[in-house]
Image 1 (cartoon, rainbow, N blue to C red):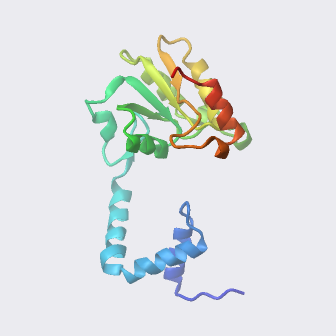
Image 2 (spheres, one colour):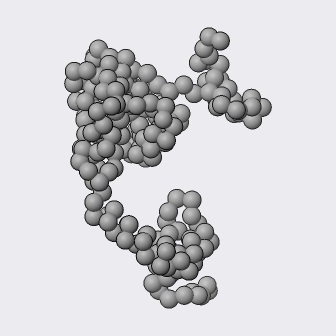
Image 3 (cartoon, rainbow, N blue to C red):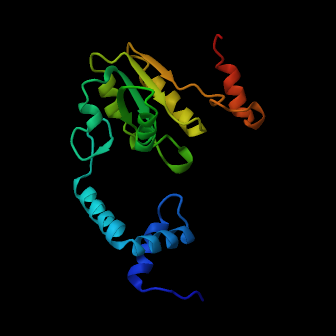
Length: 201
């Protein structure tokens, strides 16, 4: 039977850290030990930051982004193109697109994708608000920035049909060869998508 090397408070810290994505039990132990060693410069400020974030973070009622103000920073940004609405599965996808700087538009977070096997149905997603937003005057294009998984593409098709009655353009992200990618290392699905979505040179 494994024995604990530290008190219950430290073990609880390790167990909670191990729940974070990308951290297993060993990585969590190393992270906890690092935090403890850097108590004044890291553990205490992190503890304060997490407490404040927990008190102030809200989900934007308009787009579904997380922020400390309502509506969120992106929805308040008057410089963004209000005619384009980018639909994403999760806030992490929104943040990834923002890091890329590829688009300066408004967003809509679905909160997941349709997945019959996992019991995720249309009523579980933020679809009603999406239809209401794109029905407003001024929205000309909806970009479906969903993952190229079976569930992601199923959701994209469902949304396309849901919005078919509206006078707007529905587009999706191109899928294919990444910048700097070598054909020999790509899977067959990626290569097929790249061929199907080829463009003029």
